[in-house]
Amino acid sequence: MSKLNPRQQEAVDYADGPLLVLAGAGSGKTSVITRKIAWLIQERGIPARHIAAVSYTHLRAHETEADL
Image (cartoon, rainbow, N blue to C red; front, side, top):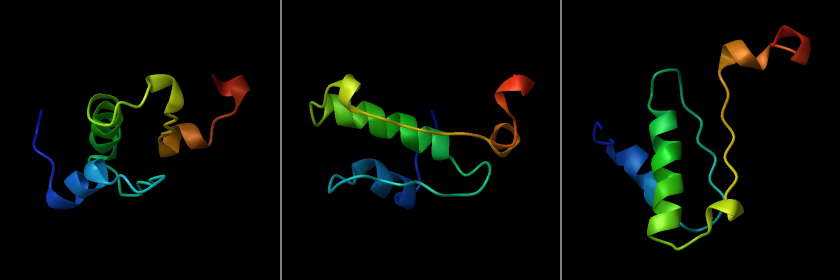
């Protein structure tokens, strides 16, 4: 696993409420989201069933159920 840059690490460590991660393609959003979930479970003791994470790609955003 690659190291996170300072802004990515700031997002992982943020604990004051909900977090929205917006960034361009290839910027490491998925790494931030997965590490954030692991951090919430391991460091904050939050049960996984209490965590909601949503991610999508631009390609999938324009598909309908029929396309799948």
